[in-house]
Length: 157
Image (cartoon, rainbow, N blue to C red):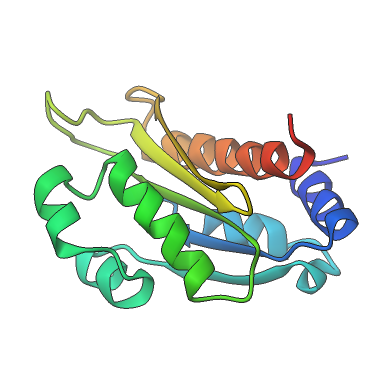
């Protein structure tokens, strides 16, 4: 069984709706979930917030947090995930913000992706350094990692 199918089945079993807030993945997590027939039973919405303005307007991310930490930070991932819950009918949300490449800097290198998961137990965040795998590979790895985070939140793993 594929990871997206497993996530959907776990959400359905728990009676939970999912929302996504994506930046560097551009909707790939929502697409992976909604590629599955019947996903509308558990996928409420996906928000692609590529620009800082979109993060502020659609998710309620604070300009002060962007100024203090930058868009690629666990603080922003947390605010994105919380905002996705607030602006949806979901009980579980995953957020992704990162540098898919090419490029980056010494401070925020290519392949750094920050994740946030918001649900009934609060918000958790993490940063994964995928490395300079190339844009498509970083985005695919981030998508798969986010799906794994959703599954973990749903199953308590």
